[in-house]
Image 1: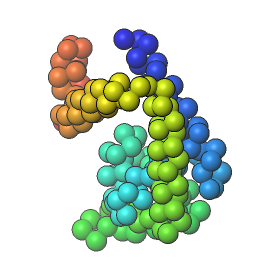
Image 2 (image 1 turned 90 degrees about the vertical axis):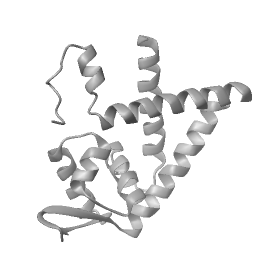
Image 3 (image 1 turned 135 degrees about the vertical axis):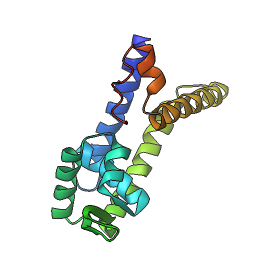
Image 4 (image 1 turned 180 degrees about the horizontal axis):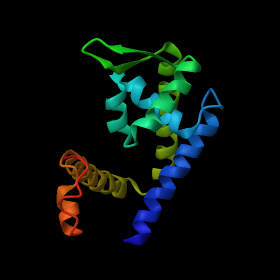
Length: 159
């Protein structure tokens, strides 16, 4: 199990490094690139939605968005539904970065998967989709089942 965890982490980290070194604006950090990918995908989203998508705290997202706004990648405005909240809108520059990142990620993962014979790729894809579905369900339930297994019931930050 430890080997699988290490493999997931390393492949993800190395893919992010590949993308970061080849993204149009080399001054962007991997976290900023990840944020632009989320914002660009949605076009417009609240800062709270970005917190949830990225799985980081509000302060980190506030710093990220402030830097992206200063660099001209996003426009931040008050949420018309809730004046205390902020809405983030992707600029054309952000959408271009998002498109570049998707193309780079696709190239990286396609290259990586070439190491597997085609029939194994199909099996691997099915297994990865099962893991993704389980992770999505866990996230939606705030990982209650996982916390219960660990004996940490009641430590749920989602409640």
